[in-house]
Amino acid sequence: MVRWRSGTVSTVRREWRGALELDVTTEDGEVRALAYPSLTGTPEPGDRVLLNVGALVMGLGTGGYALVVALPDRLPADPPTTGTDRDAGHLVKARYTPLQPILLGVDEEASPHRAVMAEADTLDGMPVVTADLHSALPAILAGIHADRPDAKVAYVMTDGGALPAWFSRTLDGLRNHLAGTITTGQSFGGDLEASTVHTGLLAARHVLQADVAIVAQGPGNLGTGTTWGFSGVALGEAVNATVALQGTPVASLRISDGDGRPRHRGVSHHSLTAYGRVALVPADLVIPDDLPVDLAKEVADALAPLTTLHRVVEVPTAGLDAALQASPVKLSTMGRGLTEDHAYFITAAAAGRHAATLIV
Image 1 (cartoon, one colour):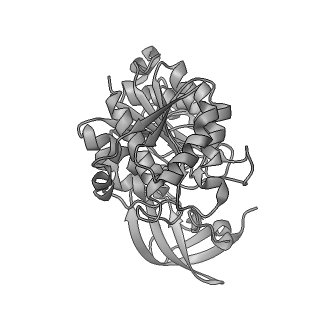
Image 2 (cartoon, helix red, strand yellow; image 1 turned 90 degrees about the vertical axis):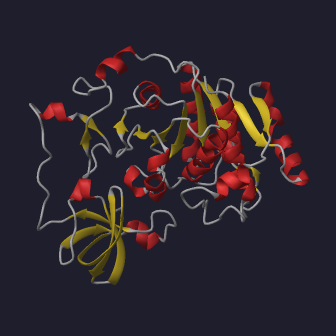
Image 3 (spheres, helix red, strand yellow; image 1 turned 60 degrees about the vertical axis):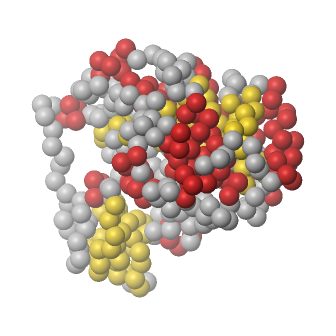
């Protein structure tokens, strides 16, 4: 449940698109907090704030902030509208929570993209790269742009991790390298808002004019250590959606030689479940051609049962290390960088390189 605190903003620290990092003085001492000005207004030193400190108390690695719920003494003004309130949108996300935002959906009647979206029904073969973790996004992008630097890439964010796209400093750093971000399901804060992965993919193709889409959850990942209890099962559904819309699915496998947990070493059980048991249609499962011998054998053995449905594609990695090292944002997964978990990042980059060869 919610752990509440009241405090006073002492310092405004760094700022990135959609988010402010703060120091807040509470009865428990100084805490690091995060505010989303679009939801709460913009905190300033001296403001009293109401905080949810649950993630901070739990010590979560990704979400370990106190979160600003409200500035009770200085509420923000109502958002501007043109005509009726419905003209500003009626997509409710984070539904029936105290901070539910009401947004303009890309395909709503009031949207400038309504006519395009009403006609959109196919991805025209567009490659769609699916990834389990948000940390794969910059590596996949690096792989695409290594060979196709002019390719327009859209990020379709699912709601398995952070709901506000603003939480991601990675997205802020990639802003000039993406055609745009589309937040789907309960997630929000992208350049475009969509109700489903299907409409998100269609918007990527027909509104953002993307050559490639990358589908992944926002920062953070829910997992219980059981076969089915992780948010990445949605990847299998994203593969199904891609094929339903006549796109070309490319799987960025979660392969690791640096994760200390047996279930995530080699090919993670997340990938094996999502693609082996949830996806009902074929996808290209990409592996780098230069994995260490022992790891390559382990990966091949793990993927063998999936080859009755999917196609395993070995992709050359020449030049991908340089592309990864040149990433405009820091590469990090579960606290491990490129050196500490090379297999993870090179696999994601290889998936991006393969997708680049499929651009139509």
